[in-house]
Image (cartoon, rainbow, N blue to C red):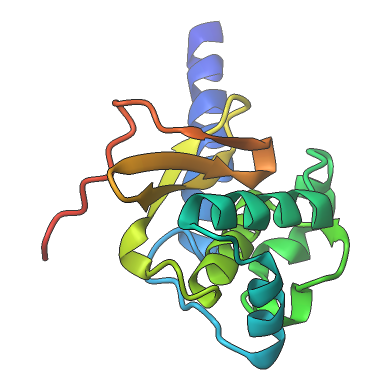
Length: 168
């Protein structure tokens, strides 16, 4: 009987914190629109480096310094999970969930003019605490970086973190 309750709890927890957000929150399923605006272009121009790797580091550091990742706010500030317009968020210091920080990261990278959508691969997984989590793999030449501003990770991707994008 205890095992049944544990199983019911685990299924409910998985549904509540992984399946439901995967379906309801923008940015986890489907295509992400990359905004372009004069404000975004101005910030992206300031962050543009001499090469793609330097630009990636500059944009990543900008996102790290501007947007916080305090875990308790994931459940307290639920409305922030539904943001879609980066132009409204840019430059304002605040908490943003992982998928929105990732959207800011890729929007700025594309707006620098050095990256295209083909250089970016969205990855979704279950985090350590059972919450849905999102980050990006970013291809620079033959090198692939894992960029996860929410958990402060910018490093070379492991061989198991595949960048393969199937042709549809």
